[in-house]
Image 1: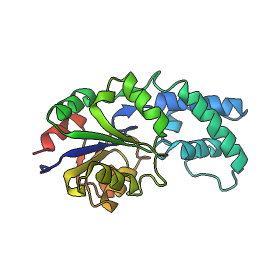
Image 2: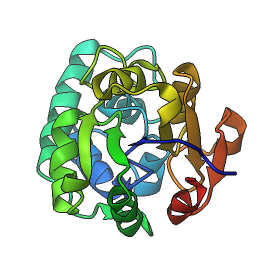
Image 3: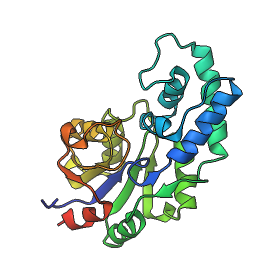
Length: 225
């Protein structure tokens, strides 16, 4: 299918543009070591990523994707602070771009599309990562998981982008790898592309109502009329 009359392309970050799990896992395990707790493999931590720093911290403390209802709020606060400090020092050590991301973004930018990041990652980390990966100049706007009172899957961040750029949802397209991205787009009355390779907790991205599902980031360029 072809998307018509799109002017703004909104991208998720982790699992869509970048594989940040190695650095997230390093930082989570450093936090757990500091607290004298059990550490986990990168692949286990990969299954916990995608809902923001606080949820990731809670899952690590619980040792499971299902967060324990008995977590001490004071422990969560302390652990989150340690994790964020560790991650700030390791935001782009082993983080890599997924295949075809950079050249495709440059092509889209060159065609005049307005590119935006909407992520559940804390905003303070987004621009430094984009800068390290030489993508910063391509994005005119970044909305992080703590930029607004609500984050994906709530539509607030997408509605905010439409408001700030003075664009209707019909002129925008959300691109992401998880149900949070797709649910936010549906709630914002916005079309979406779901990518199959990211962090979706083992669930099939096809089952969440994306307008189109793709395996290869480069294919996005071909879907825009």
